[in-house]
Image (cartoon, rainbow, N blue to C red; front, side, top):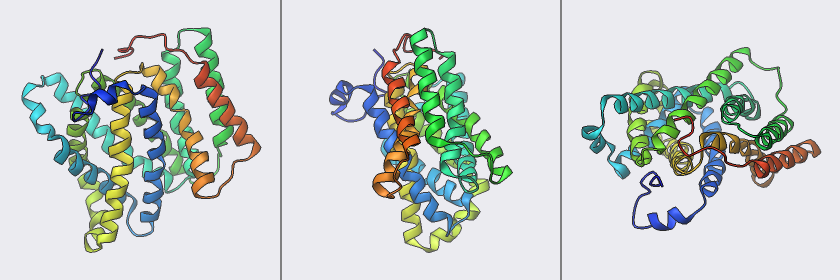
Amino acid sequence: MTQLAQAPSANSGRVAKLPPQSFFMVSAAFHYLGPSFAVLLFAKLDVLGVAWLRIASAAVIFAAWRRPWRLLPRLDPGQRWMLLALGVVLAAMNSVFYLAVDRLPLSTVGAIEFLGTVLLAIIGTRTRRNVLALALTTGGVAMITAIRLGGHPLGFVFAFGNCVLFMLYIVLGHRMASTGEGIDRLAAAMLIAAVAATPIGLAGARPAFRHPVLLAAGAGVGVCSSVIPYVADQLAMARLPRATFALMLALLPVFATIIGAVVLRQFPTAQDIAGIACVAAGVAVHKDTAIHNEGT
């Protein structure tokens, strides 16, 4: 079996015993904690500045934790190009995502983002049972998110751009996870992302350097949005076929609804509850039929 993306420390044996779905649940939970910090920062900093703080703080943490430059001597040119590609994708995806949520409701951006994961799940669908699972989850997400066609037109441009970039992240991330050293390669890609994002984001982040609280909040965004969930993604991708992982992303709007009810007191409607039931049924019906390296 593929090593669990080289899970760090002596606890890797315990980590290996956990089901891969548990890593996805961790990623999903933190997926919405990060944006909650970021939205608060939008009032103080430029949107691209917030994106840069997220990327840069995550890069610093990964560099101190994994020291990814040690990878370079043993990587061939093709593997180095893949690192470069993922780094550029991470920089662009995080920036475009914030530009979208600055103009559109988070649920709308999330629903558009899910369109790409639907396509990846369709590519990996092999049985009638999985077609049913895909139909249930897609319908459930549509009910939960209730995509609105109003709002800022440029926001939809950014949202669909984020959708494409998110698909690339899944494809490239899954390939890295299959190497057995996915976390180290992710760390290297995040350093590249920080360099790529600097020309467009550093200027907007400069006011934060005069306010330690803003810097700390930016670091919190990085940890919640780019460290914990991306590491959890690698651990899940190392053991789940790509189509299965893509289908499980349907749970993200479910987590958004639950977190909204618990933290923000935004209680779900009957339509939301029906959508959650459809998503849960779809994930339960789905069955892995592809090998781990599917689509890689």
